Image 1 (tube, helix red, strand yellow):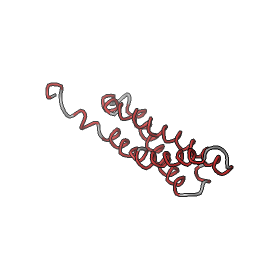
Image 2 (tube, one colour):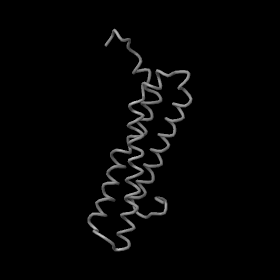
Image 3 (cartoon, rainbow, N blue to C red):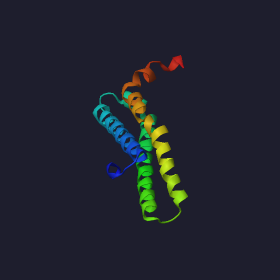
Image 4 (tube, rainbow, N blue to C red):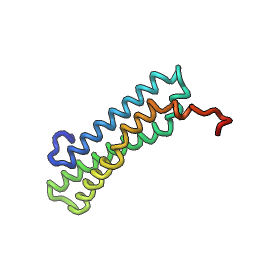
Length: 123
């Protein structure tokens, strides 16, 4: 649905949501592929995995709300300021929060060595 929307806000939502969902998919594939062979590495990224999932799924919901808001604005229904704010907050979310997804993917997939580098007695 975002692909069919005009405007920079919806293009940014589409791009960031696409990149975020690709990052989440890569992490899920990493977890599935490594769970039995390197469980410590998988668990090292578990908190970041939850953060990534929340961010990507939150971005999806924000984009859904923005699409509805634009439909309402186009139809001249409801409070235009409220619906414009929905689109604005969705844009803020994708620019400032959802854009973190690729970094979280990297930390989860490639970051276990740093997490596991120290032994218990070194803490």
